Length: 364
Image (tube, rainbow, N blue to C red; front, side, top):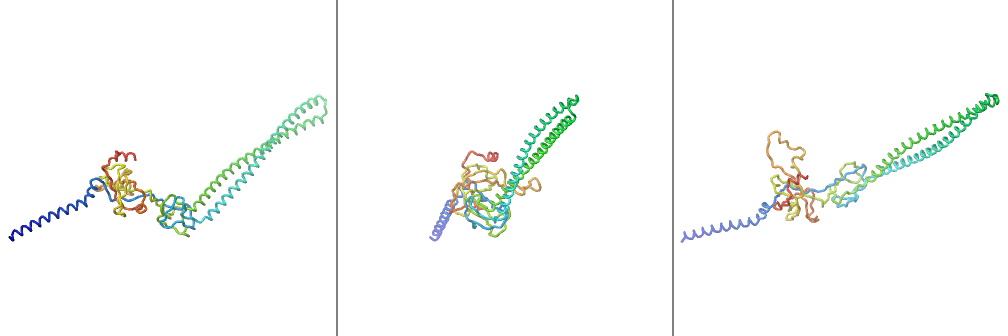
């Protein structure tokens, strides 16, 4: 009987082990089934991060900061002031440029008036010349008549001398009128050149005035987009220079995912395929998206020092191709997505959108 009992116990123990093994296998299948399903249906990568629109904020003019309108990580609207720079110097420069423009414009008016006056003098001189020509022609005819009579001893010599003198006077008056015209024409030419030069100077001064106006406006820096302030590094009293990074504005809604898939994973990938997105920061939360585009080249060829595979010893390494994934889920303030966060995208490669990878790369 004792041997029989031992056999029964042995058989029962073996059955329990089998049952336990089956139970463990079922539990493992239940828990691993989802992962197995994801492995078969989806292509995934943990080399993926959220990217987004980050606008660096830098001044375009130098000066001392007199006011900072935003706090660290504050939300801002487009057109909202961020920083104000002391504007006294720029306001003084603007007033000086305005004064220069006004002075040049007044000088231009004076030159224009002088030009109009000279043109009137020219018309008067031309009229005088016509009168002098008529007087000279009359004196010539009178001289010829008196000369012929004098040759016939019909008039006295004194009358002949008087006619000759009158002719010389008329000729001198004609030459004087011509000289006056030349003088006035020279003056008009000089004034015309001065007027053109003055116009150029006014244009230059107006351009400088425009720059001064722009620089004055630039003393207040406004937000270019809706977003949230990040990396603020400016304080009141600080002296800042053009191009100096003082903060950034991050667009929380205009974001996407840069996923670096292995080149062996993209055979069945198509633009438009749905993507499930898991974020390391929010376990259990799944976001939706879709494949938007493929970079026409691996990440290595766009690096600072691309690999030179034609030199030295060659070791084949699986390359990665950056894939742009658009997030379709609406912005949720309870689960904000910020650039740089780690994610795991799952691309459903069973969905055939009809767009092939080679066609996408060719278009790009």
